[in-house]
Structure formats: structure tokens, C-alpha cells
Length: 282
Image (cartoon, helix red, strand yellow):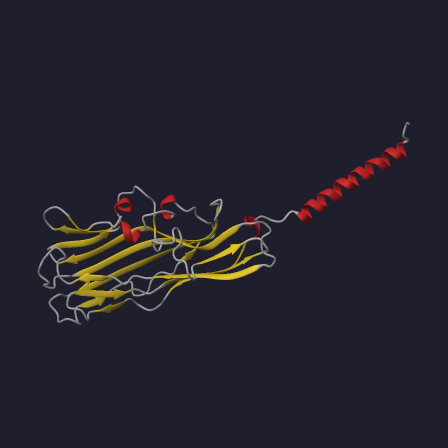
């Protein structure tokens, strides 16, 4: 049977209508992926305004405690339709480290990260050494196990500071004669807010923070214990930078070893060859 032009127009209209309904239905029924749906509501980052404190109570070591770096984020995850497990949290890596303890004319001790120092890697993991790649596994992470019927809102937070001990005497000497004359430290870190799919290892970088901690303590070893050390600039630390554009995570920031296990304590005398005082732990 031959269709008249109106019948052809009607047929075309019906075909277009069903196509449109199919598109609308598919859009309505297809859930957004985790990547598309996760929302960072708020990110806060700071370094405490309190200056580094110095402890001279020990006749063997000088101790100091720097202010804390702090980061927190409020995150919203809409209902997860699939059987997916995602962990959201903080990953941190050290990008640069200078840590020198001078002992007058004798030389200096230094904590070093050899691969980072020699430019073999861009960064090294600053994980807690247990929950790689995460900085920690208490307030630092949150895990969402799908499917979920309701949206999930949570806060993940972390903090970091330095609290080392530095010997008054030369570390390779049997004598504890006070000869420490200065401490200098300059370290830079990148901290990422990240979501990782536990099954596929898909990694989403949600936020990137850069921060730095600097320290200079001047020491007069001839003064009585309790009166030797003086904090120099900077008394207040530069505040962290929350980046407008995220940076990728270098591979070494995700795996062993972490900075604590990879660091080496060297003795570098004014004359003679350097000596490994404390080797790496891995």
C-alpha cells in the first residue's frame, strides 16, 4: 500500500518521538560515575602560628617541636549504584629535604634521602609506613562501599610536624662534649586529597596542597644546658598553598619505601670521607 505524504510525516514524527523518549529514558536511568559525582565541599589547610619550641632538658640531645601542618576536607558522595568500594583520603610526599646539624669546625651531620637528593626521583612517600599509599588510616581516610541508597558526607583530616632529637656531641664520637652549633632544616611536601577504587586502582586527584617547613636554630655549646639554643628566622612559617590546578602523583609517592625508612644519617667531616651513621631501614 502506498502511503500518502501525511502518513509519511506522521510515521516520521512517531519515529522521532520514540527516539527522543529512549534518549530521555537512558539519561534518566544511567547513573553518574563516581568520578562525575564526588564533590569536594570545602578544603582547609594551615600551619599553626605557634613558633617552634626547643627542649634542652636532656644532657644528651636537643629536642625541638615544630608547629603543625593541618589539612581537612569535607566531601559529598551521592548514592553509589554499583558494587564499588572507594577510599577517599590524604596522600603526602616529600619533594625536597635539607636537614643539617653543624658541629663547629668539626663538620656536620645530615639526614638525607639519597634518591631524592641525587635527582633519581621527584618525590618520596610520606605514608605512615603501614597503610600505603595513605598518610594514615584513622581520621585521614574514609571508605565508601557501594551500592549505597543515600548520599555520604564526611570529613577527612591530617596533621604533620617534626619532633626530632639532635645530639649535643658529634654523632661519631664517644665523647658527649657539647659541640652542636646550629640546626638548619628546609623541607617541602605535596599533599593530595585522593579517591582510589579498591578493585581497579582507578585514582582520582581531588585537591593538591603544597607546603614547606623551614627552621634555623643557633646553638652556643659553651653556655649552660638550658641556655644554649635560640630560634632564628623564620619564627612563623609560610602558609600552605591550595592549588587551583591539581598536580599528578609521582609513582614513588604511592609505594614503599616511605621517607622515614629511606632516610640516612650521614656524618660529613670538614676533612676526610663522609660516614654513614644510620643506614636506611629497607
